[in-house]
Length: 328
Length: 286
Image 1 (spheres, chains in turn brown, purple):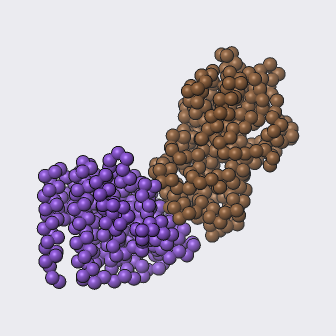
Image 2: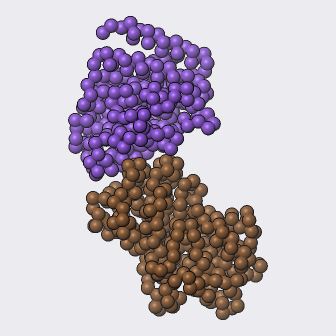
Image 3: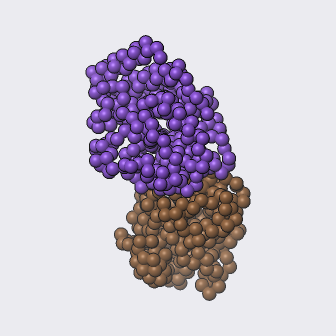
């Protein structure tokens, strides 16, 4: 059952009632608040001000906004320069282009250089929809994960994205903050706790632990409800910080349930689930199934039909749970 | 504005020869590294550290210091040697270059030494970082200048041109890009591999002020920086034409010395030649 301590919205599993807002909106709101709190916060964008939701910041703080045009490598390297002058730059583009196009600049100019740059990667995942594979970043976590000094946060809804934006503005060090394009359920509240590196048990259960990140966590909760009817009790862990991952939280969930399904809008290879598998392989070998793209690119379509097609929808998650449950 | 007299020029020329000798010793000891670019740019780094920059080796993190970034990180031996001579760290440490545990990494890392300013090696990113610094300084009305040394070869990188566009658009008047224009890169000459000329006109068309100098002439380097500082509304590019391997006759202008250190015999000969130049300079009464 849902964990009361997480203060999720009432009726959050009722799709007729739940509010739908893109996670990127939470970034836009959070950035304005962060900028009010800290005059060193800056916004830098590569020709995608509206769709990355940096527009509100630009309008409120025009003197702290920089427009670069289509120059994602510049976005990162120049951001590092701003950070070296004690600014706190949030650099925004689509995840495909930044960090996608600018990997080496992220590694050398930001992470090795220990520059306090916050990368806001919008339009991650296949739920970008009709734009197709070129714009659907599902490899971005994999390329950010192995870089030392990098923190990776994938919030589960717009509310949490706002909290994450505020939290990363306050911490010192490189961050990759990932969010999506499409509207998704808002199911956390202002009272829901959030701390970088602290995974959250949204639903308690005993048979299978579903460990997810991003907006698919809500679908994991929906799947868990369905599975309850079949007699499979699922724990749902919102594993929003992909790096540094909450090792204890992951191990506790796996230990309690004895089987794990990881859920993310990303390639199965190299994503959040891969890190979960590494932790379990090292300390607590546990049957595991991965929900994610299976070495495939995305394609055009409606977000919902794409998620279903790639096994990331509620039914796909439920199927993965049934499979791993049988392997226990 | 900081003018320079004949005596000062001579002092700096002597200093540059000493720094060149340290570079030879460092590269010999390291057994790898980049000779030609380091020697070619010694006069620029000497002029910067001993005459042009506002800095304080005793207080390296001084908030109002001028920032000097090195984009073509592979010529870091010259930067390390100039910094040691300026008093940032002991000269003995120079011989740890490229060794395990050394602060003097094969390509420079900002976090290892105060006032090293940037991590570099992968080419094309230095001007972008310098533009970020200069932009931040401009928006906060800071008095300090941002200098960046870039190589001609790295003008092949698209990122460098993105930064050129940005600096021109934003009229970063306190940004000075000194281009190590020695016409060589790893695989050959710049004009064979991917021609850059007319480079001056290219910069000018990007809204940069451009000064062409002999990058091995200390007076010209100082005067070019003075002139750059008088230009308020544009970033300045100083095309510092220099001879790679400068000061060692068998290295001068030779592409093969781009990424090669001297062996013991070559180092001995190089040090001898540099000693000769020192003697000649000392006896030269201008």
